[in-house]
Length: 396
Image 1 (cartoon, rainbow, N blue to C red):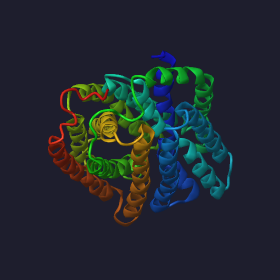
Image 2: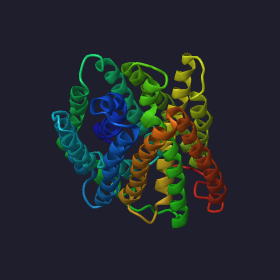
Image 3: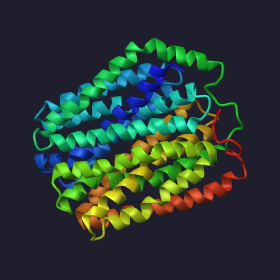
């Protein structure tokens, strides 16, 4: 496999994930700038991620018929240019409009990127997905560290401008290396078909897994999106310190995700997902209790490891459950549901926090993780009837 293709695929994941978290990172400052309530801030995230959801599905499906790397490269350019445009305006409505158009570009990456892994990876897919998620966590961690350094020296507008520049570079690189992406895909065509040749999984089981992912994401994404704000408003940390602290989530992902990916190659990925869904439930609840500040990084590290560490397992489950769909379409469904959940979870979190406060809302948002664990346990038992992951768990 061409090394440059693998590097661009993985590093591109990190750059795209930055776009997902750039608003939550700067949310405490943007709240003050525009005098927004928590509900309004949640609505802003919802609108942005709603666009990401719609175009994740549309562009994922298109990527089954059009070169995936072209869609990804164009997406990077659109996302970067419109985020930069939004950072240059003082008009709030125009800022929101730029964010929504940028969301189209942001939605281009994940469905096509996951499908690209399926296209050109013949074995040890758990490890490939693990490294893919590793670079996603690395990108977001670097962003939070950079924001922590810059928040005391630059405006949030300038920080958005700086943070958007890597996306421009990545977009051009995907076009420059277009021929290498085409060659890698052509070599894989004879070995890996666009629709898997293994025993079909029941469509109902695919839907049930998507529902379980939705429950899981609903709980953890609301918490992650408002962690910086929680640390500033409830614990009294400075905005730059809160940005550093929130970055620990992604340090956890950096540490644990490659290991979890390798586990998916030797164990049933449903069990790996069950473990990484159950662990954050008590940790989020404990994080809201009065205790020494030094304990907080431990909670953030383990929650982040579980958050990102579930990625390889979910990707392998989607690939195995989606034998009747094109890869881009299947991952498009997955990313659309993820994006919708990512958008409505912060919205409802913000609305609830306006009424009952951030602390109690954090506690309530830990409960879907417990529910998701119960659903996954039931699905694990049901899946045993079909032996979908018996023998090797690597999709070949």
